[in-house]
Image 1 (cartoon, rainbow, N blue to C red):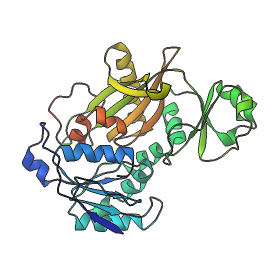
Image 2 (tube, rainbow, N blue to C red; image 1 turned 120 degrees about the vertical axis):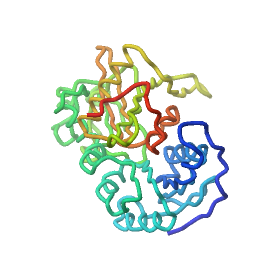
Image 3 (cartoon, rainbow, N blue to C red; image 1 turned 90 degrees about the vertical axis):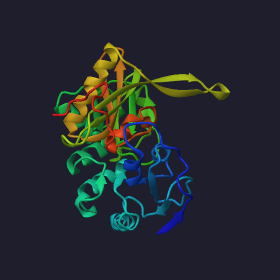
Length: 327
C-alpha cells in the first residue's frame, strides 16, 4: 500500500447548511480519485472545507487533501481489509464510493467498518442489482417502469434475431461499468452486428433517439437522514473545438421534467435504492420517458447539483425543492 501525504486543505468554506465546526469534525474517504467522478467529489468536498482522504488502485497525487492511499483493485479480496486499516488509521467518519463495481462488496461488508463509520451506499441486494444494468432493466420491467426492449447477447441466435426481437437501432452496452465510457456500437441494421461475438459482459438494447436527461436523486436512508432530493438535468449538445461537440447539463422544470422525474423515482423504488443515485432517462419520439441506466452512487452530474453531497453528509435543508418518494 502506498501513501502520499498532501498539503493541508486549501479549499475555502462554502456557504451552506453545515457549520464550519461540524464540517471540521468530518473526515471523508473518497474512492476512485484518479477518475473523473472521484476527482469531482474531492473538489466539492475540499471547497467545503472538509478533510478528505483519497484512495485509488493507481498511484495519484492530489492537492488539498490530507492523504492519498494506493489500494488493491476492486476485485482483489484483500482490498476491503486494506480499506478497513486506512479508515481506522485516518479516523475516517464517512466513506463516499465513486466506483459502481465496488458498491456490492462495500454494502455487504458495511458492518465490518464499525458503527462510527458511515458508508454512503444502498443495501447489498439493491447495490448488486444496480451494478449490473441487465439485472437493473429486468427489475424495472418487472415493476412496469418504462425501459427500451433489452436482452443478453446469448439470448439471440444471430443478428437478425436481435432486430426481430428488439427493433432498431440497437445499442451494445457493457452490463457493468468497467472504466470505459459510452457504448461499443450503435447498429442500424443486422449487418453491423454480424462481427460481434456474443459475450456475457454485454447487453443489447433498442436505442431510443430523443432528448436525454440525468436525474440526480437522494432518498433518505431513515427518518433522521435528511430530506429527499430530485433534480432533473437535460443533456444538450453545444459546438466544440475543431468542429466537434461538447455536452452540457442544465436544470429543467415543467411537465416534461415532471414525467422524467416520476419514472426516475419509480426506478430507484423498483431497485430498492437509498442514498444518492443518478438515473439516465431518454424521452423518445413517441413521448415516452424510458429509463436506460441507473447508478447507485454519486455521479459526475453531482457537479451541477451540489445539494447532493449536502444530503449525503447530513447537511440537508429542512424542505427540498423537489421530492422523490421515500416509501
